[in-house]
Image (tube, rainbow, N blue to C red):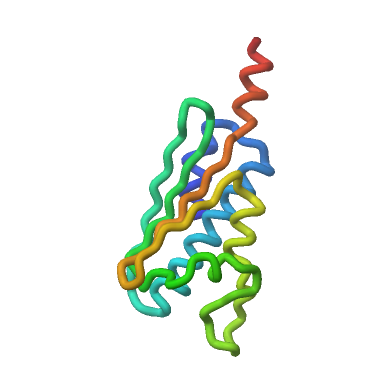
Amino acid sequence: ARLVISAFILPLNPTLEELSDVKTAVSEAVTNAIVHGYGGREGTVRLHATLYEDDTLRVDVIDAGRGIENIELARTPFFTTCDDDAERSGMGFTVMESFMDDVRVTSKVGRGTTVRLEKRLRACEIQDARRA
């Protein structure tokens, strides 16, 4: 997922910070889908990326897993649905929120979750200013 999203935004010449931020947030969202959405069962995680004219990148990370019963609680730092012996920090959403401009979560129990990540790529603004 990190390589796919990198390949998608590299032609836009993002800064290293932007590239790292997006890769980290996407990785966290995909990890959450695998660990919490599917809980060790086989499943599919889809990425849908869109770049808008205002240089806003939107990435939807979509799973058809078990869903999130309480989204607000799941977004609380250090909350995890993993067993006590699992090495999970419960910081996935916090990490996503710290690296992206907007994070939205929709979920239906038993049907899956979509995490929408958005970030305005300012590198595009810098390139436009240099051309002017």
